[in-house]
Image 1 (cartoon, rainbow, N blue to C red):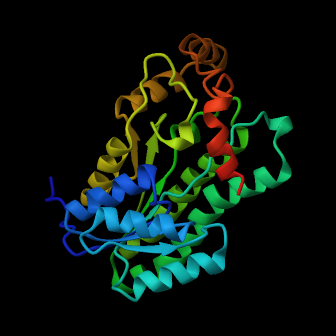
Image 2 (image 1 turned 135 degrees about the horizontal axis):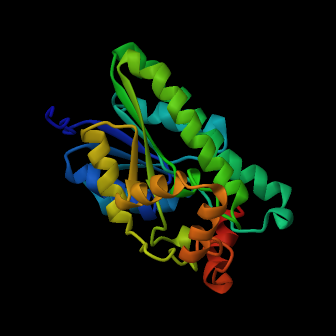
Length: 275
């Protein structure tokens, strides 16, 4: 086994890092000696997060759904040092039945969750290819491998992230640039407020996902699930016929995980995500 990559002084850029998984990831990278750039839609949130992380962390404003904003964000980060690693973490998860979801919500979900991953990768990859090294880590979701009722568009966006990442990996790896994906199940963050985990699973913490992201940065690999055993559950059930797989899903409560949610507990998040 090769030695883990040394992250000391590496410039790590993280979107959606003002809270939740992104903030936990910023803390972990800073503790590993990396220089961290925190991106968030809210300048006050970004600044407070950077101050909390310390170690010279910088907080910058970015709307990942706006290519111009994302380009300015990357340009500001690259002015500090070459970007060694981009973590495309920003994402939203509106939970609405497919036939009730508004066009604006559909567009925003695809723009933030999928288009922004494409945009971010295209913005940082040219300089990485020119240097012959670099790494893009895309935070996807277990729902990107297993579509679930109540989040059809969210599922589509995360399926798209995985498909894009596989193709980008194939194109960029010969140039020394790694592309990786991290697939959390339910995470105890505001995004998953009011959502219960399926039977046999538990909600993981933002810190567990952050640890996985840092581990991937140190030892690049394409796909990492959090928690790790979820990968085995998925692949085991995926070989079953569709009818049997659906029965197993119902037994685990997967058919209602994203439909039977605490609407009141999600109200604040849904309002913020709709922005």
